[in-house]
Image (cartoon, rainbow, N blue to C red):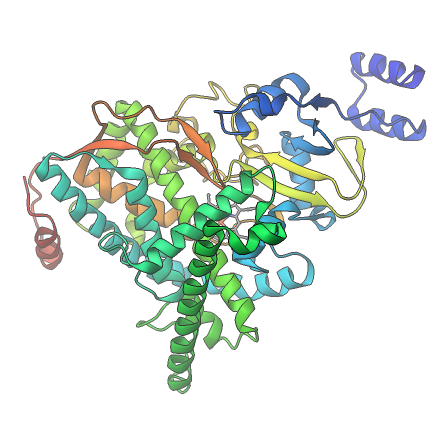
Length: 516
Ligand code: HEM
């Protein structure tokens, strides 16, 4: 501090551009200090951790240091700093603590991996999610959602309320298992050991990400804790299953050698695993398993959370629901959605865009500096742990009009689909820069199909006496006590079938017993 900083403050009040001021402070060797917030975060226990970070952001601004005890984190809520870290100078950052926490389940899979391993795996995996693959998945999304509709049909008939969060979790698990390694968990129908194993591992990953002490590393505890034993057994079951699936797929690929496909697609098995093996991906079986496991988790929890919060938001805004159902009725009629339909579901897309703004999954991105850098005019050392709060970016009161309001209309229907690039890193539902989500198109179509089919067939209301919907976090935002809803079948005007649709009509009718 001292004279140079006084001068700098004075100059900034006179409206001297920021770039000049930064240059000026560098010349005088007088960097400003990052604002510090101390210790108050643990005071708030029954709130998810990103909520106090929002309050602190309003007080301390787009970058501040959060200190508790010997630990300190940089909390970033400023779009240009986020862009710098995620995109412009991404090479100076690693996944840091995230890689440490997730090591037991994802190993060196694509999400936690850094450096050369990440580069090689990203190059192998991105092509697997090409457009034709995602288009081929739309049928799978429809079929899986149809299974969920059958379940809801039964509940509607029996007049029983349903807990939608766990059903969405099962829907997206069924989808991702099939899409990534051609495995049918069928978790909407049955509770098998493997489904339970997946949930055991997921819960453990979430517990570890919020645990104050890494008990799983303590020498004796590691061997005697019943919980850890259960986790290890679950991991073994999943790994064995994955090894089997890899072996089955390898045999299939060997047999089809002669009928070489342009995109390594196989109608019997369009999975990502099949693509990787058929494209001759040279990879150890441990690495392949890590990548499959990573995609299983990344693609399952996130989409389930998006659907959960979308239906919660819709239940609060009947006018949005009405408009949504109008669009779906006029675009889909009585068919399962096709890719052409999805392009026409513009309002539905905006509903999901807006749900992802209010409830970003995950709400916070984690990085660690691996070199010295200057962010937002502040110098930082290597080894800084950084949280980029997407929650704060998405709810910044200066940037968004009525930031907390669920208002899909804020994005014009004829405008571009909002993403981190056209929103200048104020909106990053799928991250940004080289580590952006590889499943963004997949997830968008998956969510569109699920939302469209569900609201086409049912009305959803919060159940009478349902527990209040509060947030809790692991990797994504969960509800504390579930999303209990009353589901009723919609009565719609009869659809006049034309010849082209006749066969599909029969299909759909056999699925849902009640046609109004
Ligand atoms: C990365 C969100 C669905 C696979 C990411 C990131 C975000 C994200 C924000 C960036 C993380 C970071 O920078 O630290 C979402 C959301 C989804 C979704 C909101 C659903 C609505 C999927 C699906 C898949 C997937 C379906 C797989 C098929 C991945 C992978 C990465 C990733 C592999 C790591 C990429 C890398 O580091 O190179 N996702 N995701 N995601 N996502 Fe997704």
